[in-house]
Amino acid sequence: MLTGIVAYDVWWAVEVLAKPVVDWWGLLGPCLGGTWLALMAIHAARRAITLRSRTRAVIGDTQAGH
Image (cartoon, rainbow, N blue to C red):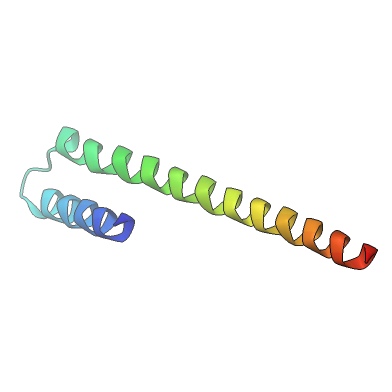
């Protein structure tokens, strides 16, 4: 879903930039939206990596104790 939204935003930006007169306000929306989505994706990936590494450490500790 995130890939589809980003592709749509990129397509929207290309259409705005292809016009003879660039509507900078029209371009601002997809740029801000794309930046916000990218930050959400980075945060989610970082959180997933943290959770996975903590889970592995806990599982490794319990197995080593037996």
